[in-house]
Image (tube, rainbow, N blue to C red):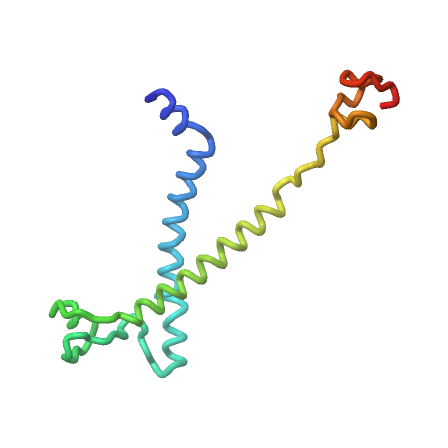
Length: 143
């Protein structure tokens, strides 16, 4: 069983998948940083100097000046600004993955249609080799 598991892990597809996960995690970090540091500041500026990462609703009934004060107090909150950032990150990441897969599919060689190797006997409807001169099932020579 251990030998079979080793073969499974060493297969090319498994290694490719592991590399994909590593790059995917790194890429997700870059996209999250891009959204938080490049995309959202101009959007916040256009919406009246709003910092989305600081938008929250405290659930304990108190008001807090900032997210840091909220976290320091340990108060429960709905951090909807961070959720908005994460949704935008998800949409951008999804779009990039979609474009990557679309490009990959265009580059991938199209599967060629396989040449048939068998034919159907007109008499008994059995499958016989393409090169057959006579049906091995019914003896038909009109194949």
